[in-house]
Amino acid sequence: MARPKFLPDNFSLMIVGMLLLATFLPIHGQAAQIFSHLTDLAIALLFFLHGAKLSREAVIEGITHWRLHLVIFAATFVLFPIIGFVLKPIIEPLLGQQLYLGVLYLCLLPSTVQSSIAFTSIAKGNVPAALCSASASNILGMFITPFLVGIFITQHATGQHSSNLGSALNIILLLFVPFILGQLLRNKMVPFLTKYKSSVKMVDQGSILMVVYSAFSAAVNEGIWHQVSIMTLIYLLLTCAGLLAIAMLLIRFGSKKFGFNEADQITILFCGSKKTLASGVPMAKILFAGQPFGLILLPLMLFHQIQLITCGILANHFAKKRSGSQ
Image 1 (tube, rainbow, N blue to C red):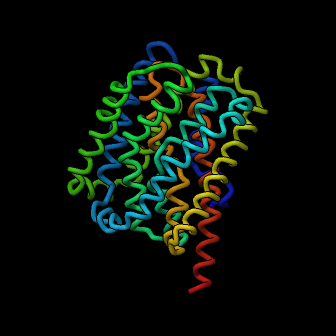
Image 2 (cartoon, helix red, strand yellow):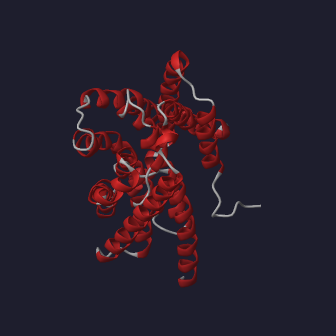
């Protein structure tokens, strides 16, 4: 029996499990340092597998549709940051500085890959263009997101000047280099990836769960649950839902105004409104190294679940609408 579309998926439930585990059994001291190094290795393996799974042929097929990609990139890296920054006078008093920084951080992240393509396919959108745009968003996001964090968060929001060069170097070594190696070894890796799909999925999800557990263990040790009340969590949930609604409405309106056909409008909507948990969690570990970042990750994890539910409902709606019109 299929899972009802309004219920959390298994991965979301596992994330909640990591939050509970960190709450009652946080890791600390020497064990936390060792676990952090193991997490780095898992992240490098994650991005190696991402590189090996990415089809160059499909990317080339969709890359010529430059107007569509430009609009999606503008939604991802311009519209979202502007919305997050403009709403600061409303969001920060409700949530506090750290949670607001988490909301702002998710606004600076690239799009998802797998779910953007999956929802575009269900809704009968332009799948090759979705694959190209979402993949490029993730690759370029390894560099654009740290740059935007330096502009919107590191200097202006926190008043701190962290080493952008150090963060960029860590991004290259831990994320980009493994990704490129995966691309170079793709032909040799495809049979393995096909044969051991479940194991690859475990690595994908396991590395993210490790970062979540490590981050929230540090946050619990710093007293996170004394800082966040039930009402604050409700405000955060409403903030994430409102942010997604505003972005989707503007993206939908803009894609119509630019004269894109329905298939391209669907692609722009799903690729331009999504924010990646898979890349966002590892990047947060690097960009906010040396400071508790559990609170910064919390908005992203809530937004992740909200976007999956919303896009699932919309994808089915578009699929029925387009099937009826053909």
